[in-house]
Image 1 (cartoon, helix red, strand yellow):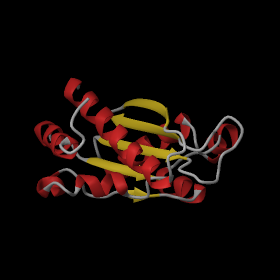
Image 2 (image 1 turned 45 degrees about the horizontal axis):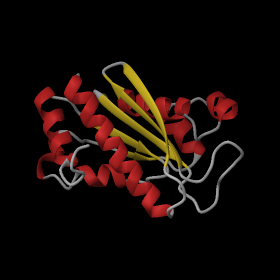
Image 3 (image 1 turned 90 degrees about the horizontal axis):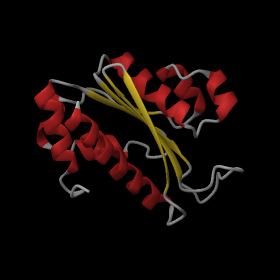
Length: 162
């Protein structure tokens, strides 16, 4: 496991080495993933735009998430996270797109989707990956912070092997 304090630097380094741009589409993290990237002074060379699409309608309108997907599997799903990631990347012409959707709590749980369940999508040059993590119920902002750490670890792992 990488040192979480250095993940944003490592991610920017990987993106710069490859000449890639990244865009985030965030729901439950509400911009925290993009904000972490701009801790790095050279982030402007890899990040042009990012989305906070908290409402379902925003995911459909700005990211091209299919309403049929939301209706079929729910907004907190790997399917929607993948559509968010791909939609953001394609909309912005980025090589890397990230989608994060989940239930940070303390409310919002549904049968089969407990508080602390977060789904992630990663789009890299046409390949789409998805993950689901259960962070439990340590508190809303801790779930959000753990989600950002998780996605940074996965991005670094995937880009290092790309």
